[in-house]
Image (cartoon, one colour):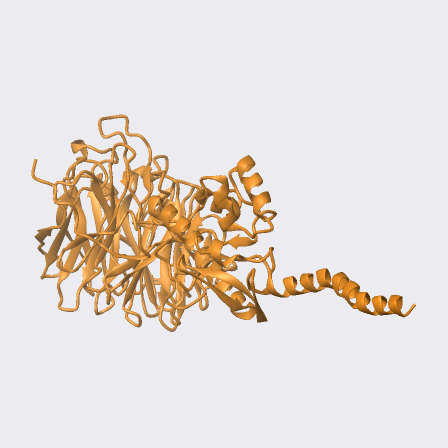
Length: 616
């Protein structure tokens, strides 16, 4: 009996120990090993897969799948590779899933992937991360605090706190969202108007990303940040005519441009709906894309814009001209595009609440107008389309101004006008070109130091392209304080050749325009030239031809507001008789031309000189 009791006392602890051992081992295992956690050894190979993929795909990490993990699966080339992208516990499931789908999913991977990053992005951005908060830095190492293992850039894994992870992930997603609104280069839209039925193919066509004359401004220089902000009508990489409203800037301190921001897909190929840009007193960037208005969330920043629910702007206004006047707000000019094509003006102190639209003129079949502001003064010049003929026969030159920010309107000599103007012969008439059988195409308008208007326009004998309607004469109409003085300046070969007028501090007047015959003669645009007048428009000298032997016509040279000498005009090119790519250009005050990059691999790049085409 004593022997049995002795054996019981001897064996019982062993039995209890044997029974507790599996429990203890499981407890130890759970404290020191987790098969569902990230494996430090396996995950260390992920960066090499990402690197190889990016080097073969223009620097991009995997993208384009149905889900981010579906995209990430593009890195994998054989089933065994899947164990680098999941935990030990899920490895078998991941292999089977990949063999069936050539992909990864949330059911078979313990990681999540931030799609939309590149090899050259900052190492502060999170590419991959463990799917949930945990204490497991890896499957054999438990931390004292909650966090997640994450892959920064493609370079290193690190376990960070949950708080830091959430902050870093927000920053990464903000970066990706911004990138998705970024294009990888500067590509202008190509457009054509009505066919001409002859060798010129179209009456109005080409690279029209900075058209038309009745939309302005396209660029604004901001001295506070030493940048020229600009907009243009762009397009996608695989289309000449898919319309995208683009915003960007030129950094005068670095000489570089960022990837342009895609603000809006207009879903139309009409450049009459190109965007225009303004900058308010606080530095917010405003982009007017009829009928939409967007404002940058941060001053002097194009990373993110917000929609402005402006009142009374209306949904049938086109040809927007949106000017910001320091200390006053906005003054806008627009056109209602159905017969008669009525021209309007409106003002706003904050860009949100607008005045009622003032009908300026509604003569016969309507008008085109150009405008400019200066303090409380705003001015407009316009033509008109005769009854029964329409705006193809646009003629006459008119002018009116307001000195009280749109409250009342008057002629250049102070005669008050009753609006809208409805008669052909009225006090705003500058010159009767209808009597001379000449058409009038408006180009630009400026105010001199005395606040007197100077109007740049072109006259021709007809609307069809070709030499039969020559001469196409550029003219300057200048108010001397007593009378209108109208003088010829130069000639070009198409009614829609468009350039900008500069009234400079030293008294010189300058025109940058495609006045020289281009590779598609008698079509819209040509070769760019720079002209100077030192006697207030009485005589003009061509001081430089800016482009030469170009493959495409250059069109619509636009003057920035407060133009900086390093970024003095912006324009585009394009084939005028058939669809083509369109490139964006700018020049400095001396006429040195630079090309904005069509393809960008980095976030910021410099422009380049144009290709030197040999004489033919």
